Image 1 (cartoon, one colour):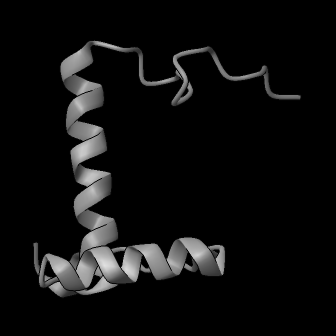
Image 2 (cartoon, one colour):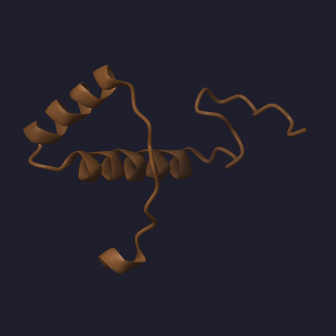
Image 3 (tube, helix red, strand yellow):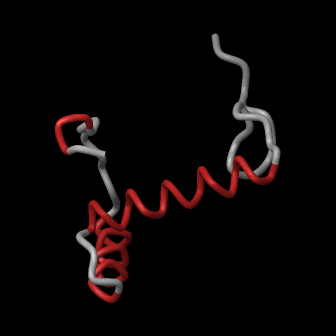
Length: 67
């Protein structure tokens, strides 16, 4: 995907989680951004393969109704 077509957004991350992601990314020769994108793509792929409805939460429960 060309860089011009990527969606940029701000993500606030706990400093301890950031340090873990940074170390993991370095071990796999990726940037932190690249590592996060890789993890998100893998999670979406697993979600699609599981046949779960797209509206479910990560724990498999339905999200609370919107007000």
